[in-house]
Length: 305
Image (cartoon, rainbow, N blue to C red; front, side, top):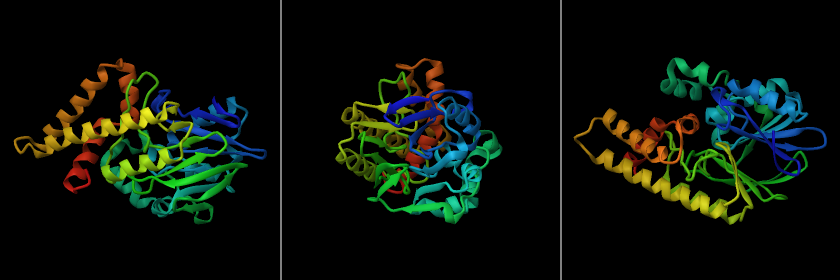
């Protein structure tokens, strides 16, 4: 585990056996602790080991705070509740139904991942309704003794929220804040289907900046202290990607497979300039480039990009 601030640390779930892909924030209190974005259940063994290295037991989790319900952020929540039955799971109202009854979410994801579902994500257990704490945005919470503010921050997903830890000023921004590996000089906006809405994403970044956070915490991966520069670069890259996708969508001479292939190769060309093969693989584990094409292309065709 690595230290963020007093009583704030973060753990690495080592997604697909790779460090630096999915980070889980840990808020420690006098009687237990809370997790922000615990990742998929395939990461639980590694997450539990990293927590144990910091003297924490998964059975003592008091709360799980979800920025959104995508499998790489929220998949382990139900499995954790099985271990810690009094654990509260905080989630936006648009995602809460799927956490309580995940069949539709699992079916939708299976259309994308097919027979790789279990390998990638493992169990996505339902969270009992009694354990769910439904959010709408603008709540003021006390979690394990920590004052937490909630903001509704869609654009990446309709059910996305961000959390501000008031004492430290750290904003936990899920995927609204983009993705950045330890060796990246720039930021990668994750744009998977089905909810990408570029103008709304811009407004959500503004909402986060209104907090004037001291740092951002990215699920992919870790803390960022140059807050304003990071967010400006995120939006610039989002516009570049939108322009690239729009040009491909408008090119009637291309098949859909050719459009995706050209989009993915251009992203790889850009990031090869700053990342070696290992780092590029780490980035694509957190942000699969073909998924980014699918989300942006859908948004453009719906008039949302």
